[in-house]
Image 1 (cartoon, rainbow, N blue to C red):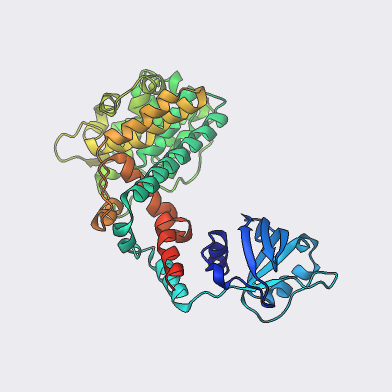
Image 2 (cartoon, rainbow, N blue to C red; image 1 turned 30 degrees about the vertical axis):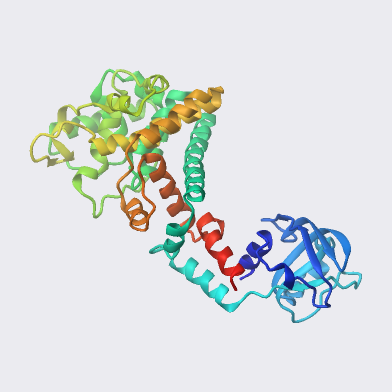
Length: 428
């Protein structure tokens, strides 16, 4: 409730005619102030006219006026600068430590507005309670929100890459290796893949880049996938022996349980073949970043990942589990699209940002706009309610909307939810 009141105050959704203190003094808001997400008053540096007198100071918001005392604000000097107390229920006056009364304003929110807010927030995790607003939203406003969401998602990925860059002291190939590994988790196993890549320094892999067996031994061993597998095949025996030798040679500590997820998953999506693909990418030396910065079109990315698994993994899903027929191609078209979106595009954008090359940033965004939209339950859900995804740029925006706003129920921070609630306030 208090969060909703803060939202109404911040966005000036309260009818101006009703803005008077409990003592009958007219209140005009020149500037509602800056929302404070830390300790102290809710809004800093507000500018108000109260009873014809100008005030500059802070604003505190409570559901009940007596919360001021329950929260011990009357003894906290950080609240001496409060010039207005906004409350849902006026159940008492509040004073500063010197006994001076603080002007108090009662926020009258209609019951149906609270009902609509609760319905919006409660339903966000399942369907789309705002679907009627999506359909009614002017295209220019919806497009603006989609663009913001797509860039927000891209900047979040770029931020992760920048943290990798600091971790690896500017080594872009190591950053690329970890980014690729994380992407190979395809969401479900992204975290285990990232921890695996971080546990095996790329320089160790490069020392044995002429041996596919050594590369696979290092990655499968660090992944913990050799621990319980029975030696029913000469290849598995070789892997275990090679890993024992290399782990001792490089003094590699085991990362512990990485938390691989394989339940209710098709064998083709198990991490084994993807780890084998990661090893294949390091065979002959890992120089993927140098190739990525030279890409200009999404259609050129397929060549980067166009590889066939060799040896044992050309005919197996997992250890001791053989494929039905020949499936040597490591990645299908959908998987390549995912790697383009989650590896190539963010790396290009991050490299362009780090080097001041705005053209590379534009190339990264252009790739998303060239590519077909992703096919998943989130894209289907929004498409059913009128938000069609014509390209990957839009489908990335929709994923950001769902994951960062709908699922955590941050409807107040979503432009669609804001528009819906604003209309409820103004029409009451």
